[in-house]
Image (cartoon, rainbow, N blue to C red; front, side, top):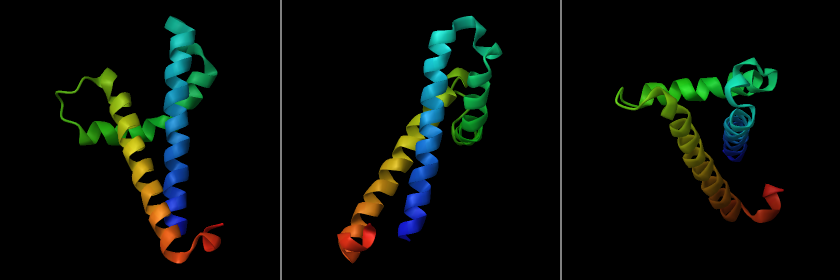
Length: 98
């Protein structure tokens, strides 16, 4: 189960960095962000998680806020996986976690 928590953490970290990078690049690029190839790449990486967040949220949530919801859900998932990893490492011994 330690490996599963590591994979979940890894996927969450990649998605979190993609969403954060997309947001930051969107701020820097401004109105021409849709023409930026790196913005499109980050959007492609983060889009599955944004779609999942859209499915989980009610229609009352605006579409422009869904990436933030996805980011917050991924932070919660990352924290849960980290806590589980720490508990597992304490249980089996820190030497076996390296």
